[in-house]
Image 1: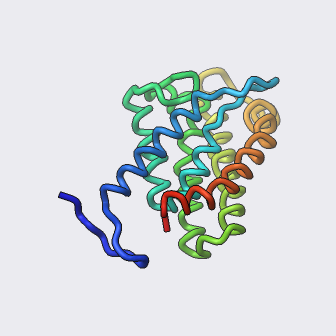
Image 2: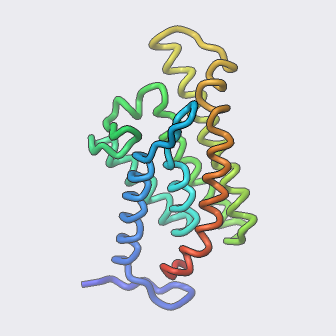
Length: 189
């Protein structure tokens, strides 16, 4: 039996919501396995993060990100290079993954406050990038210092942030472009 929830545009099945959330959680996993070989290889993970929140909206998109992280935490190899487990989340770069939740929450808050306009989504993606960069960088510095000794902010930025800014901006722009078309195709309001 399907439960129906009344919304602005009519009715929507909770089953559809669960399916969309699951599909986008899987999409994030698949995109984390796609590694683009450059001087510093990067994945398509952040593209999928932005596409999920942009297409599904803040609540559903944040749930997709949370499910993705929970799948990885319990040992399903959904992270980059088919890795998984609490060791990844608690390791040096785990803060960037955990930062995805805060990015999605920020995007959700901006959507709730300012609506679903394209400029709002674009701005929320930029601010979302800043959120996972800041959270991940602080996390990296703390965990690295605990395991290997103190490390300077300039070094961490040169390892973990600067090489990824341009690719993340490109992935964000691609997600922004695809979001509007995909949301119409799957009839997400």
